[in-house]
Length: 143
Image 1 (cartoon, rainbow, N blue to C red):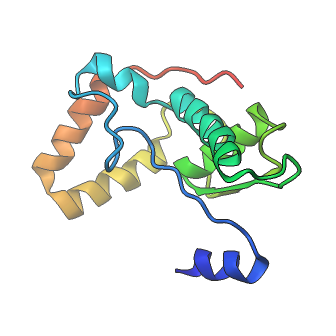
Image 2: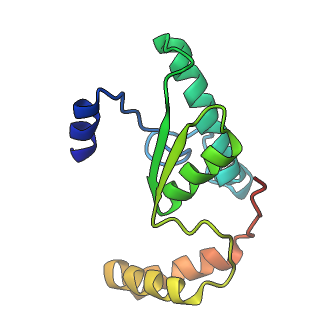
Image 3: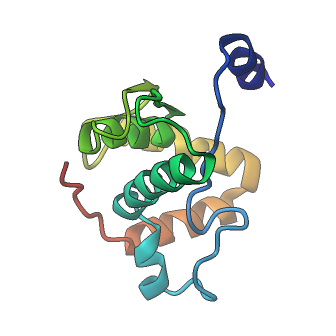
């Protein structure tokens, strides 16, 4: 665990946040479209801010304790957006490989992802993901 080694060498506290609907974070009992409305980036940013406040309260951390968000790809977007939206809670963000600018129809990226899905999951899996993505409505994030 490289992150743990770095945290230890700098005397830092390392905490991770699990995104809703991934792993054990199942806030609702079903995966309906209505329930999954709570799985987006907007809610993830609110969860991140709430986590930071509760962590500081529970650990009695001084308000001056710096907090740096780290993430890659989508997690990197959340780190950067978290810093932008809550500069009073997060001192910095490291956003590795994060596609920060909203863009629809990123064909070259989607082609790579589609090929990866076909390679790992097969053509039927690729077709199922395409059908699912076609059914999803994209919402803008207001920072």
